[in-house]
Image (cartoon, rainbow, N blue to C red; front, side, top):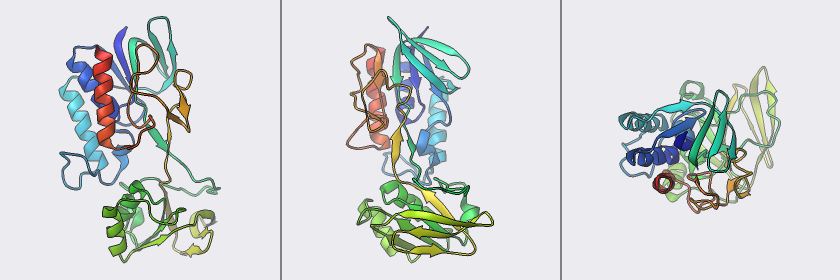
Length: 289
């Protein structure tokens, strides 16, 4: 039996693991996909102390892996299928094994939403990093006007012919830093108070994107990226926690003995790497007591 099982190896889960390991705990860090979670996909990590200039999510993820390796913490790449609270321990079943622990830290993060339209088999993407070749000289639509969407639109503009940001709010919702860069770009056009409604697909290419108030056309094909928010990864824990709009309405220490929550899976005023790391730090320390 492990002292602590940590589900999720994003910034929150990694932070929890580092602090628990330093306190001599026998722990298991479970991750179904990639160390770093969503942040591992971004084109540029920003506004976190100690970052290198223009550090990509992939590079940030590698730093997390290196730090885990330095602390002799292995990442077990298995998908968690269920979590049960027994009398005095937790039973976690994955796609490969079953594990038991005295305490559990749930840091499963979130996943990106999809547009509520029929993509008609067209390959709609979320992350431009790694897709630079397919963006060169293209017309690109980025759905969403948040910080994340705006940052990715700016990255896409380095390669694309033109970028259209489609935002259903009446103004961009991003911070001033990104807004000023978007306004200064001669490649980016912002469409506010509108939404993508339909696609015209021809020969496996999107040649027309229909918005509420106009259409964007390009016979050479349009690339579409979706950044319209996130849903919390709470399906596994919903029987042990309060869930509101797919996120956990919980403090770091839950009402269930030995159960802790950390990171973007929680409802918080601010969701950033810094707050995820803070959550993980507290969860790791509390679970180690």
